[in-house]
Each structure stands twice: as structure tokens, then as C-alpha cells.
Length: 429
Image (tube, rainbow, N blue to C red; front, side, top):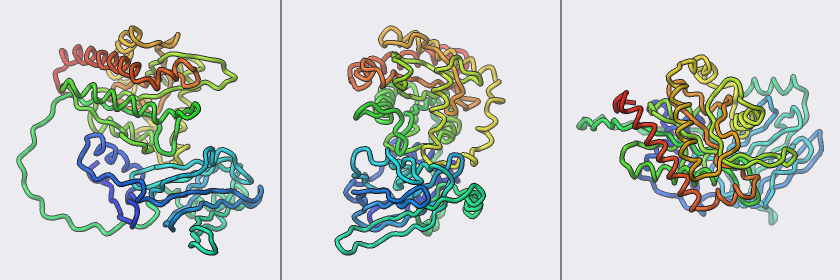
């Protein structure tokens, strides 16, 4: 990953990532290992204070009010039809519910942090549409600076032609990369001691533009991040493991990059943290569930959940056609019996420990085709801590006491898993 380092561009008030989205993995790693950094106050970023849609099903205009002009980049994506606008990091202070209701060509839109220093707005379209015009207006006549995007209905053929012009765009910064200063000649340093402790990767689901499930003022991305950080702190106290987080803040990380973090770190265990919800029409459910990977879902609910979780990249506006082949072909690699057995063994140990302190789902062990579990050489599980759609589970998810008990039982299961594995395999990962 060293040859994919991020370049940060100082843009007056904000930092813009100068690397494509896959470079988020090393950025998340750096944060996970808490390398020294200087926090940037939210007040230093441009503020988005208002937003509106106008027009009809043939032409639709989007307007975003800002307190200063910003560079931006807009491009379309297909299947599903979307338009993406990348801008430097913005402090969104939009009215509650902004984006949930569409108009004209826009079904809905969402916004948020998508990389360190970069924000993104993703528009879900009602059908194929082209970007007829996009521009930034300076403040004038009592109006603030405004970002304007004008969409126009087109047929499928015209839409595909517009994609060809973009050459299937990947996520890139809104402005050109800054010149990279020549690095000084390498200075020889004493070789660092090799850390032979097992690496555990903790993956709080969702983040940034992807909120996950929501219940009132609570959203999944924050609940699972708080839990993941608490689990990291508990595990690190023992000194027996090296812990890496896929994210330590409200940042969007693509599913494939979460897998890459685990593989590039030669992780001995990958634990993805989530909190499920059921649509009202499907009744009520409660309790924690532990999932392992399978090419065939264990039941209909597991299949539904996997399909929902696997849409995270589309939610974030990632071009899914760029998915690496090592992920696309992963099920073949997962035929490796050892990795599958280790994943199932840890899932059983985790269930055994958690059931003594945490309410479990009536069927606590399940399997489905989760993309985030597809590292062929890393034992991986996905834990749904509970259902935010269930009042009792939601009360637990926001409770520090419940979180502490659950973290304790998970830490104990991790110890039990490695105690047996290290006894036969030694300390190497």
C-alpha cells in the first residue's frame, strides 16, 4: 500500500484528498494506529446552510448555499442511475431531512464526508439524465455563494455516451493534485523490531455519506463506531494483540478497501460491527446475531441483510465496475477450508460468550454473502449487535453499561480463540 499514499492539498480553508478512493485504506490505517496529526476545527471548513431542488421530470436544478465558493467535480454513474458531486470538506448545516424527498429527475440525495478532506453529494435519479450545466456562483444581490447543478432527461444511449466521456470515473479530488516535493535521500535507520502479535482488524460499518440504519436521532454509523472504539480499547489493554481500525471517525470506506486493510495487515481476525433494522411491515426482531460468509444465505433474513449491506458502495457513489478481481473471484478462494473453519470456530466461541451477558437473536448464528467478509486468508465475522428498530435493543445500543458488558464478552471470546490457535500455530499471523 506504500505506493498508494494519499496526497493532501491545502485549499485555503480545507484539505482535499489528492488520491483516488481506494487510498482511503491507508488513511484509515494511519488514524487507527493514531499517528500524530493536527485536528482541524469544523469552523475552518466552508459551511453549507441551505439546499433546494426545482424543476420537473425533464429538467431539474439543484442549488446548494455556501458561505464561500469551492471547487467541485460532477459526474454520472450508471446502474443505478446517479450523479455525484465531489467538493472539499464541508460543514453541512442543512435542515433536518434535507435530501430525503426528491423532485423532478432526483428521487433523493445524500451528503457527507467521503474521505479525509473531501465531501460528496450523491443524487439518486429517476432515470437516465445528463449534467446539462454545473457552475459556482459568487455572492451577489444579497444571495450567498451557490453551487448549481442542472440535470436534463436523456435516453439510455445518450447517458451511456456521457459515461464513455468520463471513462468510467473513479473518485478523484475536486482539484488537481498539488505538486509533490521531491523526497530527501533516505537515511538509514536501525531496523525496527518485528511485532509478532496477532493483528485484529475491527470494522465499524458504514460511515460518512452512508448512515446505515436509523432510528429517530440515532444512526447506525455512530453507534457501531462508538462500540468499535470501545472494543479496540479493551483489547489493546491486554497488550497481546495489535488492533487496526478500518475507520476511527465519520469517514466512508468502500467495502473492498475494508477487505484490503485486513489482507494487507496479514490480519489474524476481522470483526465487522453493525446494527440491523427491520422494515415495519416485517414485524419485530431483537437480539445480537453473528454472521459468517457463505455463497448461500442460511435464511431469507440473512439474504436480505447481506443484500442491504452490500449496497454500501452504491450509496457512497463508488463505481462498482471498478471492483478488483481479487474481490470478484473471492468465493473460489474461500474454498480454503482452514479460513472457513477458523471463522466458524470464532463465531461459535463468540456466541457462547455473548449469550451469558447479551440478549441474542433466536437464531444467533447465520451466514450469507457479505462482501466485507470476503478476505480468503483472514477469519472474518460480521456482528449485528441488535436491531435499532426494536425499542429494547436500541436502549441497549446507546447504553454505556450494556456496551461495556458486551465488549467484555467479545474480548473474552477473542482470547479463547487465540489461546487455542496460538497453541498450535505459534505467534505468527
